[in-house]
Image 1: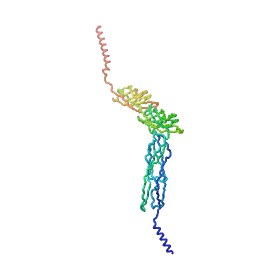
Image 2: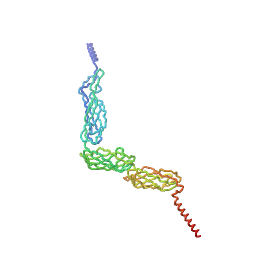
Image 3: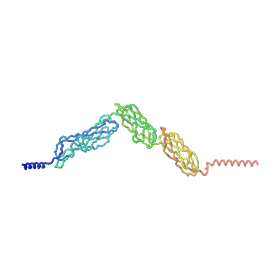
Length: 430
């Protein structure tokens, strides 16, 4: 009896050993990713504004048929996983420029999601309303999995391109267009005025509006007075604003940008800032001077008042100008400054300096440094770049010229004639 029990147990164990070992793998059929997308955060944008469009892409796919222990090998992918997802946004004719290229989002598993952001620019002439932007999803997913042999799985993937509309709104706003920017006395290193003519080309009236100018990045044009209150700014109306601005001394003679915006109260009663409009501001060069020839001349050892004529070669008036001459060896001067007064563009003024030159000074033309200090249109003290004034040291003449000797010869002749006449009269008397 015991032998029979042992034999039955042995046969049962052998039967168990002959059954293939089944793994815990699961086989899925009839499933695929189900992709959707929606905006996150702001979906209303103003004409002319920079926009960041944030989109959440979600995979809601579920497995419709599951076989447990269907195969001894487990697949690496699930059919509901969207693999190698690429997400792109385009304008499709909407008044918006998408700056961001399609983005790689990797794999999105079932019930998973990713957030992508696209940088865009709303056109300044955008019409208010709703616009649908096509969001394009490109991905692949596991379609078929077959076990060809006991240790081999065969996978087949589907490539998918989905397009999902994303709706944005262009809201009514004040949109500005700077029609004209006219500088006045605006030169390198000085202050001046900037006159702007601005039109509201937007879709609403601006209440309690203030027009502001803002420095554009590192532009050398820097607002001194940055805000002008204009009150109501109706749609299609035009206003004029005047600002005081400064130009840094390291600028050049060219056009530089400045930003303009309007802060106003919209129809809902909210304080809103319009999109910036950037306008070019022409900047004149620094006021410059030069010296008009001829150069004054001195003899070695002479002290003399020399005359030097200055000309304003800039584009604006130099007020209360004063010139200074740097007298260096072999020259000396007890008074090296001269008042020139107001000198307009292209104008000239004369300076007089008392100069003494050494007796052993070499005969040549000397380049002396000179500069002009003046005041700009806002009474700010300015000083020109240093430039050169020529002064000559020439040889003293060794003989008197014929023209200079004529008066002397005539005087001697008169004296001799008078003496001869006197002698002749005295002889006749004797």
